[in-house]
Length: 324
Ligand code: CP
Ligand code: NVA
Image 1 (tube, rainbow, N blue to C red):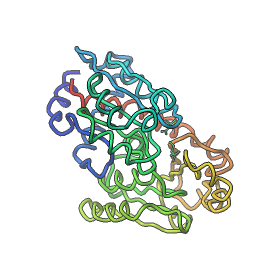
Image 2 (image 1 turned 180 degrees about the vertical axis):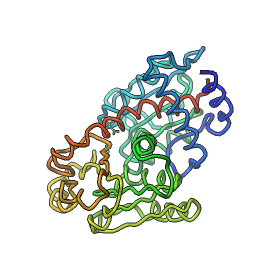
Image 3 (image 1 turned 90 degrees about the vertical axis):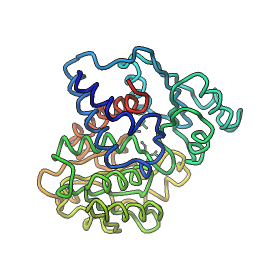
Image 4 (image 1 turned 135 degrees about the vertical axis):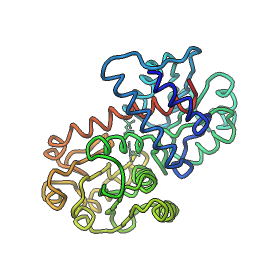
């Protein structure tokens, strides 16, 4: 336990009071520390050992404009384990930007709690919260990025495939969305090669592509974007997919189902990967759409590891940002 305390104390300066809105602002060293702390916390947790706790209980406000299972529960449990407290605020009660200006919500919350996490439709809402809050703001998913999902994914990849680095190749199939954006930055920072196959017109945003290419130039990782799912999967040791219709895009669902059909993760596609390749999914999943029920059943353990690792990585994040 004292090793963990020392590790967090030494690395506090790197993370302390930092916003976690986009991985573009978070360094390889910061991610490395977070994964290290999370892996240690996981060992304590699995042994049901009391983890580090705050003497003075910290508090987290959780603003959600969209539904959630994993993000909400993993943050609430993290705060409970640390003997802090999480306050869940649903969209109807707060009316972020409707009942009350985002800047006023940020200002008031800053007077009560130690950090804010927010799941928002528009990434700019997070930026507005952060620029008006005097406490750290954590992105719990926006239309642009899902950084805390990527932390759990990196930990899972490390556990399943070994040390992160240029020997690791992950293939992403489907929508160039918030989850892919986070993976692009996270993988390139940590030296993991990423190949993404997205339909024409549904690729990742240009600024994420540019940032990923620059980061790859530093870390030595590679990033390859294609419209051909087989090309992306060929020889990969891990496949990753996410829903084709993200929250907020429900009106496009029928059209998306047609466009994305060739990108389904199924047995035929998986045959092109390395033997024993793992399949990852951030969940929730839509069986029969982005992934077959058969592949879900075969690879469910890894997906549940990803879900479990949300707890360990977010607990690490809270400790590093809020101190011990
Ligand atoms: N993966 C993820 O963020 O799940 P929730 O939408 O359930 O929080
Ligand atoms: N891309 C999905 C991720 C859900 C965790 C969405 O935004 O709905």
